[in-house]
Image (cartoon, rainbow, N blue to C red; front, side):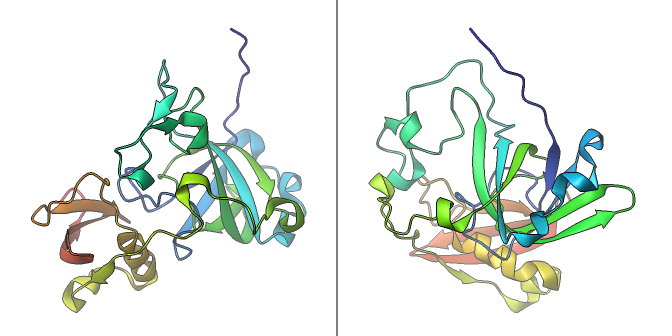
Length: 230
């Protein structure tokens, strides 16, 4: 079988230590902030010249926790409750012949760090911390935006968000700059679609914190916030 080598050009640094809780699509939680740091070979300022003029960029990356030797032609999309199978190429499932993801993220700024070279500050990313990135391309509105596009089985509406009850005493344990992003992530309902037990307590690792919560009748209630691993 013919193969092509892919080089890792950068890695992204986010608040997600594991895939649980990562938004199911990019851009759903714009308050999420992340940085992209290039690998030493690509820490060249000229390589990002002109990028600061774009408000959004495309990331081509690897589902590093989903690399498999085999593949399945069908998968169970979470949007369908995990009960129906669709063709893998009709979904964004990480379990693909090539474990490659594609995300559109906001570009806040390009920083030229003395030690790390160009660092990209981005928003709305749906990637785990340390995810390898294969390529970065500018988002071009006139070519990349299709407002009238059909959404297939996903529909054209954003998923309904949960109401989040975050007691003030627990919210104060979260750094102020992360509160909006964390609340937005929780509102997206991090649970697997097949888990609906209102008594079950879930734990979400976010920004070095373990956020424990329950969900019942469309309301997510935060029960505990503690240092991750503590």
